[in-house]
Length: 270
Image (cartoon, rainbow, N blue to C red):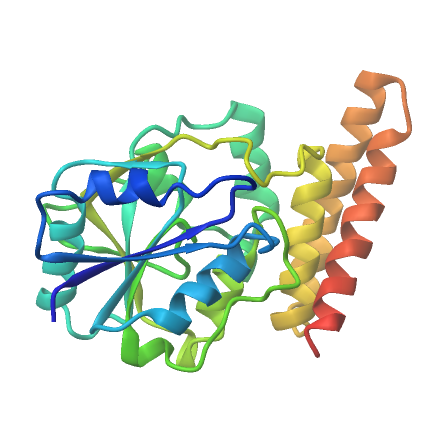
């Protein structure tokens, strides 16, 4: 079976099918399925539509704001072949800079237990790989992850998460049987350009509060201590932001994000 590219185009107005076909011109080993669906409300729903059409042994999800190095796909495929024990594997983002010192300290102190995001130090370059060996992680990034198709059969992304669908990637990985065996392939490199498309432009505190609340109420309700500790950190963040702005708005962002996350999780049936 030849390699296949499935494009789910959510842009309103005219189709970009001609552009996609032109980019694949001269590559007869790659088949193209193009779907123009501006009615789709977010990245999660778009991925689900692609999964309904996909075939093959490995499925790779890419967003439209990533820029791959030449050997990205080959490196991912090689890592999956060398490590049959892995269920899914992701690439390494190369253009993320470490956050400010206060933010790194906040993350180190307050994101504990299941809330710790072990992808980010790899992206920042603070964790260095040993040769070509994949780095084991507990979650993959939505716009740059691949799976063995057999391991995600029947799974779908949570379409209640609209727009950029923050948190859908972690949720999806957590719903793999046994939590999944996941890794980042250091030789599969790409840049994430973070376009504004589909993003809400909301305060970072609100987004952080919503994503963590969603994951807590959907998956980690037994982790009350770590969630309580995380909320202490979010409270300190809101307090510092309020003093700096001389406004109570950050507290509203915190509570709104928490309420939104819980509501999303409840709608998901947890």
